[in-house]
Amino acid sequence: MEVRAVLRNVPMSAQKVREVVRQIQGLPALQARAILAAVPRKSARFVEKTLASAIANAENLRTEWEVNKIRQTVQSLQAQVQNTRNRKRRVALARRLAKLESYLESATRLAPEKLWIKQAHACTAISYKRFIPKARGQAGPILKRHCHIKIVLSDE
Image (cartoon, rainbow, N blue to C red; front, side, top):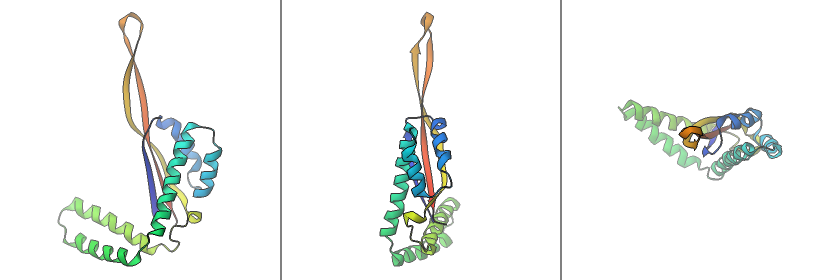
């Protein structure tokens, strides 16, 4: 089963964050957290915050685990998928159904020791455009870049 966390609009360029994100891909979650604590970069703090959020999401799922409620939801979603004629709605329901079925199939119940980083991305976000005065009345552009950090944890 997969758990994800996204930190949006981090005030740092995606290129700087990718250097840190590449170091933790494929590692166990707790080991990656220890590595990020030792990395002396500002971007490591943002990635560490996102990783902590993903681990907390997994632990929260584990504590709120109600198998009967999830089974009822799966049955109702299966009926909705069969009865829906709208293709986009059917695809969205099928995605949600697959996620809930993976919850039921997971044997480890998302213990933090069993989690590892399946994906870690730093994607570009909005860039604020500012201008600085230059010689002879001209203006030079300044791009204040931002990024989104996405981390997906898996127990498989």
